[in-house]
Image (tube, rainbow, N blue to C red; front, top):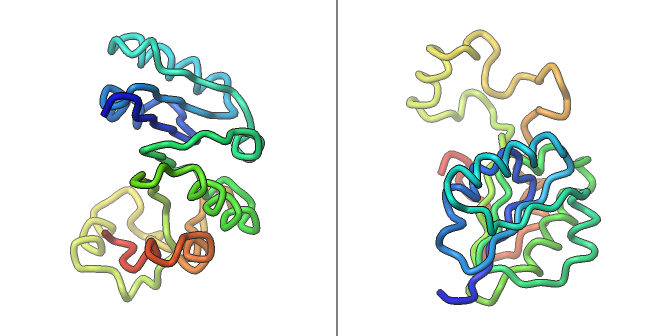
Length: 167
């Protein structure tokens, strides 16, 4: 759609921008790390996406200052770096940035009881480098640990509540 806008929060090396930016009239990637943004810029330039706007800033500061509306907001592997108390507030701020028919795509590690895992995930875990740790065991770096599902649901609009963490 002409004029459609994309925002990727915590864009890292630009993987979501590489995947989706061509579909939008404008795309912005935000990350606090200059090293990640330098790699994102190189990745985007190699793919002919030099018009993507990359901004180095704290995500909460960006959300506090930016009043734009976006047709797609991606936030993949980013929210679990926020202090838990700030996550619902960040989700609410993100939902306010969505255009009326906009979509919010996020993916985060979710804390689930190991006995509730589908057989496919349990099988993968048994064969993966994570075997022996279990999906929900604490990470070495607490900043990388899985999030409680209720924490995510606290900031999502009622029609967007996450019901199936495996979906």
